[in-house]
Structures are given as structure tokens and as C-alpha cells.
Image 1: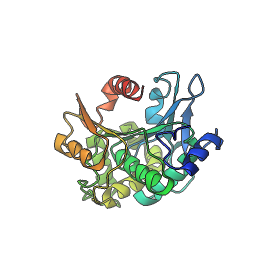
Image 2 (image 1 turned 90 degrees about the horizontal axis):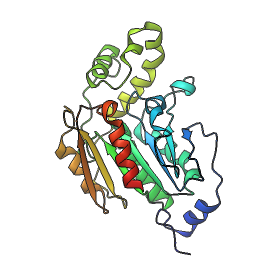
Image 3 (image 1 turned 90 degrees about the vertical axis):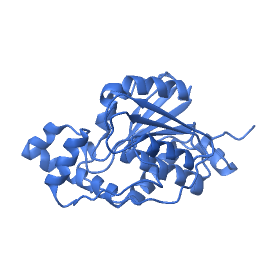
Length: 265
């Protein structure tokens, strides 16, 4: 039997065929496929985001695709857990949690901070586990060798809130209510620390194709920033530009989902 394209060595291939999938993973919200899955898509939310933001995506894919959405610590059902404040630690944790799900080909979709996280997870899968993704989908985020850490005081909640309001990605109503604000700010603060401290790194290529998505009115990420993702893949890059700003996903999610379905099929 030929080695599966997402598993490079015998150890990885054997693990992919025999390891039982954790049906109650604390790290991933699962949207099970109608049949036994032939592929999985893991969605990695943006800074300040949660699995709930992508709830409407869960069952919009074909019957053979199982969707996972990352549940970062410190929010929703993991609200009592301490937040993770470094990209390295978050990538290590997500990678470890993903290992039991590698019995079928896996793709990653990351939006904003989530795109950088997807790249870091992909590197760990290749370097440490000999596993190649089917594809990496990077949305509205500069390529890893072009990222620019935010000059933002993460101890200044008002500054963080102004940034969140400018980007428009988190339910602003949560920040207007003092009680809810106290509940969600630790996670937002931790994620913004990750973004602030994540610095450019060498353009280490991945052995999977990369597709970029960008809102044409995004004030923080340019088409040149997105095309630079071509430097970190040996399998080709494509870019899709859609109407909207940094959170074009709110209006264009149906278009993005349809594009993902087509590419994964």
C-alpha cells in the first residue's frame, strides 16, 4: 500500500490508521460528518475569537468532511482555564491535541492570528511528526517572515478595546457590558500579547499548498503581504480577494466556505 500523502513515514502512517479519535477533545469543537470522514478541516480563530464565531460553518461542508474548531483556553466552556500567552506554547498545545485526528487528511484554516498559528502547527507536524497537511488556508494575516508585532500596550484595556472595535471581529456588545467585559478581557488581552510578541521568522517552506484570503478593504494587510505566503510553500500559492475589511468573513462566509469545499474536494 502506498504511503498516504499526509503521512510521510511508517510511524506516522501507522499512527494514522490505528489511533482512536478523541470524541470529547477539550481543544476542538467537532461538527461530525454524515459519513465516516474522508478529510478534516481545523479552523483556528483570530485574536480574541472563540469557537462560537465559526459555529455557522460547522455543517456547511460536504458529507465527507468533518469540521473542527479550536477552543482556546480562557473562553466559553474553557473560561476557568488560564489563557496561553505565547504563540509557541499555543502551537505546541494545538499540535499535540491534533495528533489523534490524523487518521484522515487534515487541512487548516486560520484567520488573522489563527493563520500564524496554523503555520506554526504545520511546521510542528512536518518537523516533529513527519505529517504533511493537505493544505493551509491563511486569511488576512501577513506571511510569517513579514509579520509586524503590534505596538500596543497589552496592559491598557482601553487601547485593546479600541483596536478590537477598529477591526470589528469581536461582539462589541460584550465589551459594553461591564460584567461581560470582565469575563472576556483576559482572553482578548492574552491573544493580543501573542500578536504583539510574535516576531518575523525565517521563511521556512511547508510541503503543502497554501491559499490566502483577503478583504479588499483590509487596512492592516495588503495583497503583497498575502502573496509573500508563496515564499513559505513548495507546493504552490493562490490568493482570493473578496469584498470587505479585516473581517470580510462576516459577509462573505458563504463564498469562503464554497471555495474551501471546492478546493478540498
